[in-house]
Length: 200
Image (cartoon, rainbow, N blue to C red; front, side, top):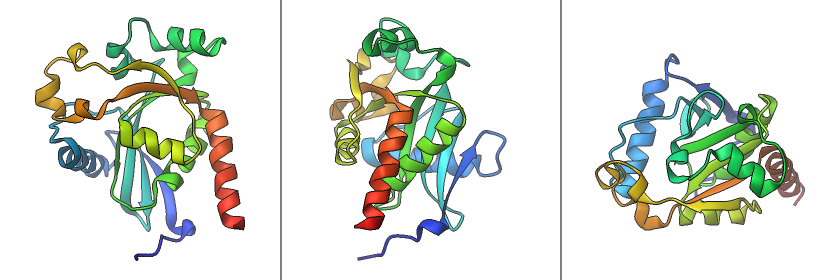
């Protein structure tokens, strides 16, 4: 069995369209979604958080800031995401504090927990407090394995997405659903999980 990489070798980098490694990041997304779902993506997230192992890109996850533009997943919703989340969590949720995750593409076994923890740390440090995302069965199961308990907001219906089958392939056969949660609480949980694993 191949050993896990040294944590000291793992870094997180923000990749935007002006970054020299942008094309590499979106190529990883294309490859992963084509392998998993026979999908042929035509649009990308405005930024990605890339997990690097000694500068080798192992995993990427995109994010979109709700204050700056409509969220892709708002196509599935009957109301703006911030309004739905404010109702569900019974508190005010400004769009400037809300981000959408998407396009998770990982090629490193056993790295997801590290990637999630570093992403949460980075986004909390940037001032974000809430996240919303679309997750298939395997991703939702992975999050539960880490002890994360995101809240179900809605089901993701392909009927609301133009050319869904041509673009997304078999993606909708994996029962995607809209989930949301508090980034700060998630970050605290993942940090504690990491500490417990180090002490075990």
